Every structure is written in C-alpha cells, then in structure tokens.
Length: 193
Image 1 (cartoon, rainbow, N blue to C red):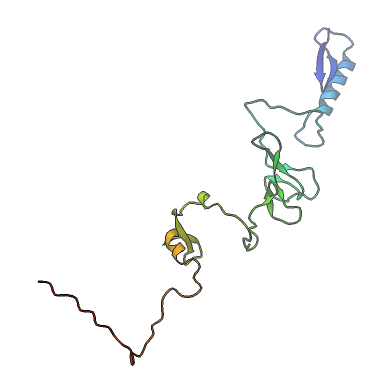
Image 2 (image 1 turned 180 degrees about the vertical axis):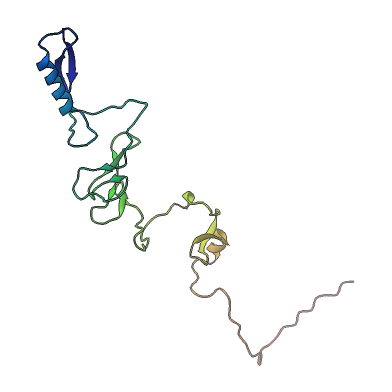
C-alpha cells in the first residue's frame, strides 16, 4: 500500500516494498520533489506563503537583495532609493520608517532628515536638546574651543544676565577732565576725644 506524501500542498502516493505497478507513482513524486525544492544551483523558487524557521534558528546569507530595480551594488543589505525599513512605534499604532528623503540623498527617520554627512550643513531653526549631550555643566554659557567644538564656558548664566541688553562695551573709557573753575567742598570729620 503506497504512502501519502505531501509536496507543496499536493498529495502523492509513494510506493512501499511489495507494491506493484508503482512506476507512475514514483515518477510523479520524484518530479514534484525536483520541481518544488530549493536547489544549490539557485533559480526561481517562489513561495506560496510565509516561511517560519522557528525560535531557535534563522537564515544566514552573504547578502539580502531587494526585488526593486536599481538596488545598491555593495553591502549586505542592498536596497533601492525608494525602499523602506520600518519599525513599529511604541503605541503600536503606526510605523516608523527609515528611508532616504525622496528629494535628496539624506537618510530620514520618521520623515525627519538625519545629518547629511556628504556636505557641510548649517543648523537653521533647529532645536538641540543639550541634556542629551554629555560634557556640559548646568547654568553655564556655551562657548567654542580652539577646534570649534561646543564647550561649557566659565561664565555662569547669572553673569551672562548682567550683560544682557548692553549696546556698547561694558568697560568705561578713560576720560581726562580739567578742574579749572571747579569748587570743592571740604568736609572735616570731627575729632575723636
């Protein structure tokens, strides 16, 4: 009596010892296996549903290539300019996309352009949260050092407030004045006994 073996959702009768007239069954099964298996030589292998490799092992490969046209020519993950890598947001209500800005080569996360390392950029109307940057002392003015890096100044925020609103130098200029025609009042302190 032949065994029922399923290959890609189709049941084939596979002969056992003692079966008669089993040639067609063996041929049909062999053809299904040959046409339906992934071979070392590669080729087209279209899945009809998701493949789950379980919780213990994954897939190890040299590269992953997108099916899009004009993918990257190097790298382990090779994507086209319009391909997107998506993460689920914390509230589980939408996706956070990592992708190139459609109008430039600047990488964007959740539609916010990240730093363009291909050219010098000027920060205009951008907010920088210094609490996320290490090396700054609270209540200090920010200055730049000889290398152009931002550093905490020795000037406190209180001291900086003293000079706020000045429109000229805080240091007075030396002036010479002539004392001719001036009257001085003499104040004599009483003598102590």
